[in-house]
Image (tube, rainbow, N blue to C red; front, side, top):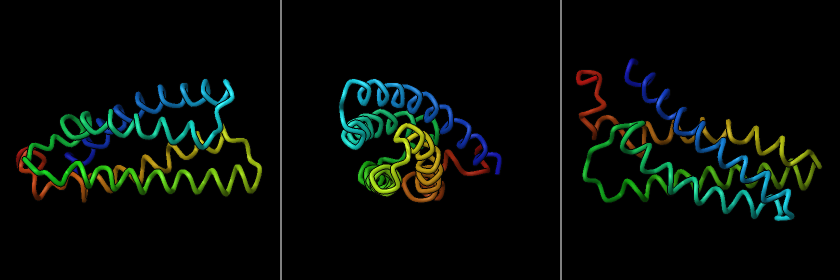
Length: 136
């Protein structure tokens, strides 16, 4: 339980910083005339690449030499992207809610989904002795 708390805390710090910068860039891009779905897509790709390194090495302290970890990471972020895009399509394009508010809310929804998937599938403790409770 202690390990999960500290993983969540580190994950939250990485996510907070990444999303604060990303959301600011999202508002700048959409304010400059870029469509909300294109802006979200570009920033999602950049954010995914950037957070992989921090989450692997710091948030989850994953040290396994696992060649599939990057594929699992991209798969989880692909799912997160689809959830985010669906929300924009339904809530902004369909229900005509303000895109800035919808995107701000989706940051939290997708972050929770990503944490659970990363903890249990992308960087699982059972394959990673450095995150097992005995070594925490």
